[in-house]
Image (cartoon, rainbow, N blue to C red; front, side):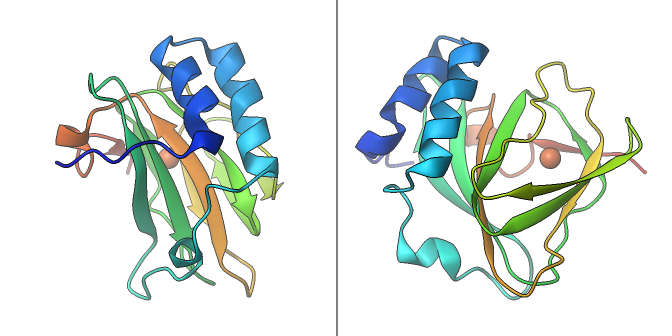
Length: 156
Ligand SMILES: [Fe+2]
């Protein structure tokens, strides 16, 4: 895979993820969610057949990747957990997260971060119950080689 240079607005976040400093990841993610210079017009377009991942950055050492996910109105993930650590938040729109491990439903708005999942204990389903697209920003502890199959584990 060709690796593109990181957008400057995401470099602090990538540095913190590389160091596995999750306190700093949280701080840098909050900044990136509020100052969305990294967000490109195509991130709002999405795929009518399902939520769409846009790869923003892949760590050259395959320690983590960063993706924007576009959720069109009505789109929903499967109920799932993760094989790897996951930290995410909302850049645009309002996302509903249902947590099955904690029996709670949270509405996440632009600038909000979901509870981080560092020990792969979260089981959730994420959906767009609004009439506008959502763009969320995700970091996963996985390399590009496993991006499509290595993040979500089914929980049915
Ligand atoms: Fe997830």
